[in-house]
Amino acid sequence: MTEPIEEAQDSAQQDSAQQDSVQRVERGEAFLDVRDLKVHFPTDDGVVKSVDGISFQLERGKTLGIVGESGSGKSVTSLSIMGLHKPGVANISGQIFLDGQDLVTSTREEVRLLRGKRMAMIFQDPLSAMHPFYTVGTQIVEAYRVHNQVSKAVAKKHAIEMLDRVGIPQPDRRVDAYPHQFSGGMRQRAMIAMALSCDPDLLIADEPTTALDVTVQAQILDLIRDLQREFNSAVIIITHDLGVVAELADDIQVMYAGRAVEYSTAEDIFDRPQHPYTWGLLGSMPRIDRERSERLMPIKGTPPSLINVPKGCAFNPRCNYAHLNGGASETERPELLDTGNGHLVACHLSPQERQKAWETDIKPKL
Image (tube, rainbow, N blue to C red; front, side):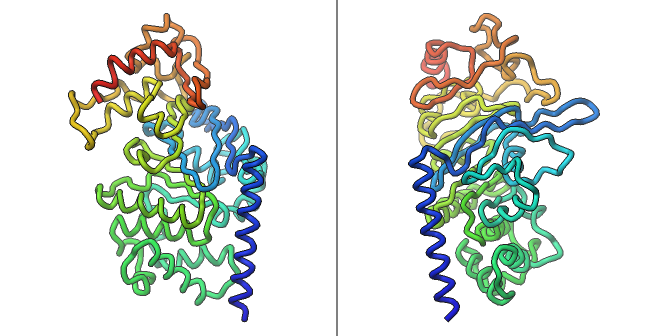
């Protein structure tokens, strides 16, 4: 008789959570609300400003893609949300609200209780993230039992069900295998099974398709999309590849040198990008839907040091259009401003100059 009662309780809790989510949307409150987040790391060489004031919102059932080169602050942002930065090493300021609770001011124990149950993360390298001395099933069982008062037998049954749900063949046997006995794609699926074992409201996927072939990449992305629909989770996809989020993300935030340089819907970012750095990311991405007129266009130079970020616009030394703003990009840092319809851009170029450059120089080459 206990199982029907527990199922009824779980159903009632889910209905209550959904009603609360609807009420929050009606009040204009986002499920995840990041406000002016800064994450700085003091070092002997200076302060590393990995994240230097970013803000975004995300509702349940929606997907946000955070894109940018290595070192732009994407993973540091996700680790801040999860509360995984070591105390005393990172100086974190700003606010991170998860369903109304500020994670920055919460205690480590309060965040630990949320991690896994309300929010979960798929790490970039599952072979490093999973413990090599324990079987995959044991690790999923442990993650599940932390937040659910069930026996090991019940938890193992749930682990087998999760492995089956993410498409791992013979889950009743694979549950007793070690991470090194899985292929790269299967390890990523096992990591997803572990992250989703407690039905989290927020799922962060940090480079979930790195080092996987394109066929497995597509399978992993389809899996995340299907599971999001099932659990109505809010999803953050972190990647350096705009192609990964082309059809998965509802909104995209482009980061450079620890700051957001462009934010809009995925449709706007691909059809009407307005920042030169976004143009560079698109220009370096191969297209399969049509033939390109020219070779791929790499972004010149290298990402800046986060200890000595260039004054003014951080992208100025690599920008092909910096000469058009009369030197403003060398001295003044551009603010992230709304150019219309919620499309935010941090650039000194005027809307007319950006439109002309896009239409005459960039778009024909893509």
